[in-house]
Length: 142
Image (cartoon, rainbow, N blue to C red; front, side):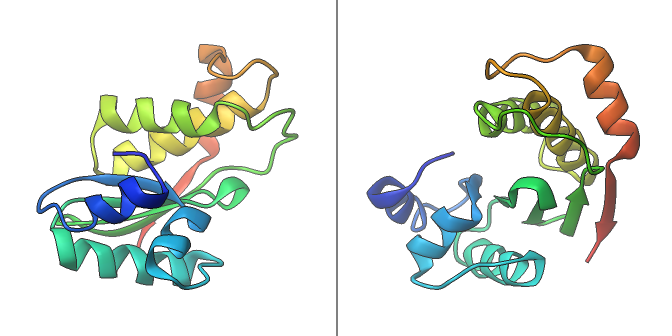
């Protein structure tokens, strides 16, 4: 699920649901400021313990974190000239759905969201841009 506001707050009580949100959305739902990787991991862990599903928090240019049954992971893309972030969240979610809530799926999702931001016109990017970003995207267990 990728949502915010009332719908996100409702999802926080649904056992087993997988959630993908950005730092601002999870912060609003938990009534706390989420700024940076450490706070995003803490917030995602809190939600994961409540629902049991994977919880992914995107952090813009800083990448994303995920807490799931597999563990806690962070993925960070290389620093690149961003043209437009429009559609990057949707590109991220599509890749995460395609590749799964795994460490490699998180890496690929970050690469897709970043590749999208390299051009104007959300939801479109070349496979060459995706592969270039993917090669420079780092993941680590936390």
